[in-house]
Length: 185
Image (cartoon, rainbow, N blue to C red; front, side):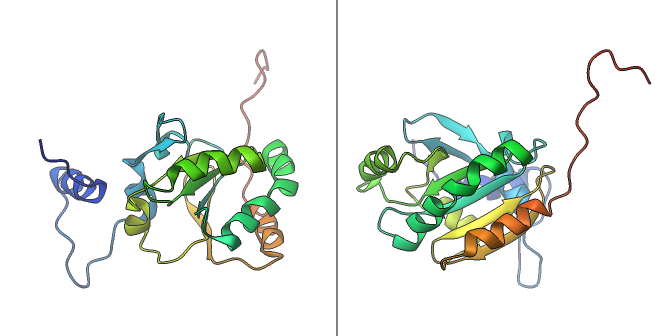
């Protein structure tokens, strides 16, 4: 059986749902719709659908990186100091998506074991996400609010960018939490 790439399957699904083909001048799909059907695997091979995390009430920082990318590793390492506060205060989850190819994917697992990043590490060895999101270089970072709306993105990294991200996260709208059980109206 011939295997089709993720991009082909997403376009087929999109057309099957009644959409018209993209042509010059036609707007592309919103980022959240393109991510809804994406399934990536973690470093242990377990599948994870991005729509099971993005848009589920908590903000998500999606960071694309590679083991050969020094700025990528520096950015994710510098997020460590802020991650605990982000998770506690905002419920933020960081998904670090490696674009290392199949030959280098073994390096990913050993690298993250050494740096002890607490983030969920996902693999995109065919760079399907890179094509879907149409970015060229890493690091490439996207911030989604709890509703799944893209609120900030940046490409590359310079020392101190983590504080810009901290400011963006702190400005996210806070969604009211459910009333405690037994609360009366």
